[in-house]
Length: 543
Image (cartoon, rainbow, N blue to C red):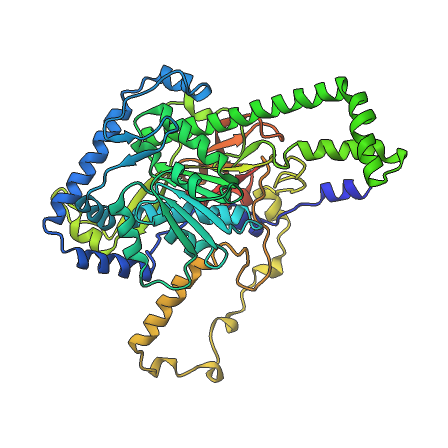
C-alpha cells in the first residue's frame, strides 16, 4: 500500500522541475585570477607579430582536421569494435610506442598564441561540462584527477571553480615542454593548489606511480583526441584512460562534425567494451556455479572453515562471500551526460551531429589578437563543443521518471479553477508609503561598490552546483535515470507553440534512444509550455 502511494505522488513541482532541467549556462565571464594570469604570461613572453601567430595556429588545427577527414566511414565503423584492424599514419604526431603514447610538438610561439586566443574558450567549455557533472552527481567529489593532454591547464582552472576544496592530487599528461612551462607560469601566483605532477606520456605515469594510485576519481581529456589522426591510437588511448578511471571519465571535443564523430565513436566503443566484459563475467560465473559448485563447497570452503572455525551451516554463505569478492564492485558503464540512454546514437542516421554551445565574454587578449573579416569583433564569442561523460556501474532504473504522478491542467481547466477574488488588484500596495521611503537616492556611489558586486558574481561560480535556491531550501536535482531527455538544438518559438528537438530514451532501462521533435502549445499544457519557452539549447527535458 505504501509503495503504491509513493509511486502516485509527484516528485517535482512545476518550479522544481524547471530548476532540475536547467543545465545550460548563460554568458560566462572568465574568472579574474585567470584573466590576470593570461595577461601576466603574455607580458612576460613579449612575442611580436602575435596576430600572425594566432592565425598560423588556427591554420595548423585546420590541417589536422583535413587529415582526420581522410579516414573513411567504413574503417571508422570497424575500428569501434576492433581497433587492431587498421593503423593510420599520423601527420604531425610522433608515435612513441604501440600503446598509443603520443607527443605533439608545440613551439613557444604556438603556446603563446594558444594561451592568448584559445585558452579562455576551452576553459568555458570545460567549466560548462564539469558544472553539469557536479549537478548530476551531487555525491561526487573527486580527490584525484588525471588530465590527459592538459596543455596550459584549462581543465585545472575549471575544476578549481567547480570543486575548489576537494581535489588533493592532480596528474597532468602533456608531452609538450612548452605547454608545461606555460601551465606552471599561469599557476605560480595561485594559492591552495593541490599536488600537481606533470608527465610526458601515460607510460611515464605508470612507471612513476604505484598501481594503487594509477586509478583516479576523475579522468578528463579535452580538445586532444581530435589532434590524433590515427584512429587506432585514438581508441587505444581512450581504453587506457578508461583503465585509469575509478569513477568518472569526461571527453570533450570541438563542436564540429569531426569532433562529434570522435565523441560518438568513443562512446560506442566504451559501451560495447563494457557490455562484452559483462557478458563474459556472467558466462564465467554461470559456468563456475554449475561445474565447480561441489568442488568449491567441498574443498575450498571446508578448508577455510577448519582454519577459521566456521560451522558447517555457514559453508554456503562463505562460498557466496568468496564469489562476491571475485566479481568487481563496479561492473559496466553508463552515460551521465549528455545522453539519457546507453543505446546507439539516434543522430547518426539523421544527418545531424550532437554538439552544444557556450557563450563567453572575450578577454582583452582575445579582442587584441583575434582577427575579424573587416567587422569589429563582438564582446563575446560562442564556443561550440561536443562531450560525453561516462561513469562506472549500472544506470539506476528503479527511480521513477520526473513526470510520473504529475497531472497538468489545460488552459480551459485553469481558467475554470480561477478565483475571482484573486483577479482583484489592490492599488494601495503598488506604492510605498512615506515611512518606507529611504534616502538611498541621495547616497554617493563609489568604485568599491561595483568591485564588491563583481566579486559576488565570481563567487557564484563556485556555489553554482550546490542545489540550493535563494531561500536556502534544498532542491532536487535531475537524477541519472532514463526519464530525462536532452534538448539538442535551439528551441523554435512560433507564436503560442514551441518545438523542441530532443534526444531521449525509449524505455525505462535506458537501453535504446530516439531523436524526436516535440510540439508544446499553451492551450493543451500551459505549465510545460511555460518551461519550454524558457528552455535553452543543452537543457534537460522531463518525461
